[in-house]
Length: 251
Image 1 (cartoon, rainbow, N blue to C red):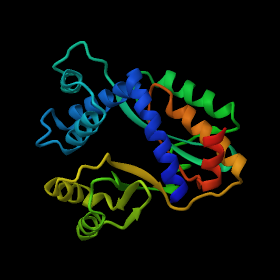
Image 2 (image 1 turned 180 degrees about the vertical axis):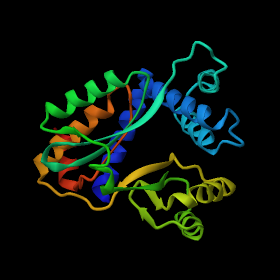
Image 3 (image 1 turned 30 degrees about the vertical axis):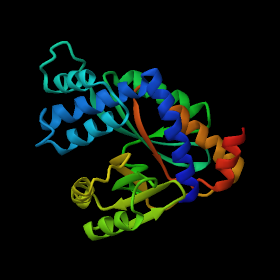
Image 4 (image 1 turned 90 degrees about the vertical axis):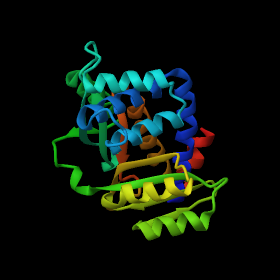
């Protein structure tokens, strides 16, 4: 997982720049609106909304933006755009499987944008179910290693039911079954441990390894898809090696 962790760190640093441009605020507002629409506008009773708000606060999203997004989701903002959340499936070049999570108010635009990015790089969109069998949904936590007791984090995560705890040079990554997501999050909250990310994500059942240069090309395609306005997350079965990350950093 070391290559994946380093790539995640690179993308997190990029997200800081995106936040300055306001791009990440748009994604966060959509996520909050969807959560509020599906479970109500009270974060005390809507766990998904609470997590979305926590992510927004971690990225310094203004309070008024958060409140506006909640009202958009609950329908209090009558001028709000009606968003829908969709998971698209596809393949990048070299057979790399992709699950692409979007929040959009225009399916036709979203599909056209995704198809353009994929086909120009030798990939394609796939029918529903053609790719998803290669993934499973899992709980994921990302905690910066500074200012936390590593052993405490490990113990809390394992006691709450985590499958795996990966301690890297700069971060701790935790993977767990979906059903213990809230339990782990509550344990951390009670202990005063604040993950930079706490989310449900699609995890590949097996990783696909290709050579370094091919890996970098697919990584660039994934980043281009992530930069599309409607895209929230991109999950892949690509095995990201240390070599590939080094090439990406020095390119």
